[in-house]
Amino acid sequence: MSSGYNVRRPALDRTGARYGEDADQVTRWRDELKAVFEQEGNPLGDDQYGAALSGQMTQLNNELFDAFDAYIAELEGVRTGLKGSDGAYGAAEQAGSGS
Image 1: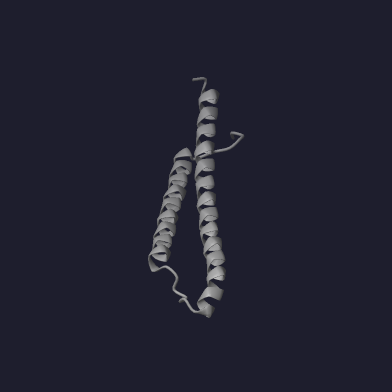
Image 2: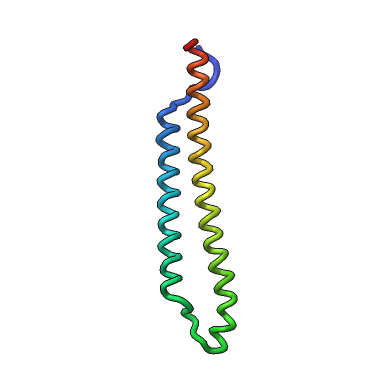
């Protein structure tokens, strides 16, 4: 019986790639939504109520896109971590094999 860890490195690589694909997709969604917001402009109107809500909308939009950016960063972080783990296990395997 061997001791230590048994790592399926190709699985790390595939899973990391999926996280990267997810980050790319969420980035596209964020960019598409941002383009729609920019295209539509102020949907609240120019009356006193629209003006009062405009400041709140700006804050809400900023919070929305900050949340997108944070999620994208999390996905990229997992991708980077899995890629780093794959490399570290590869180096350990090479060192253990005497190559």
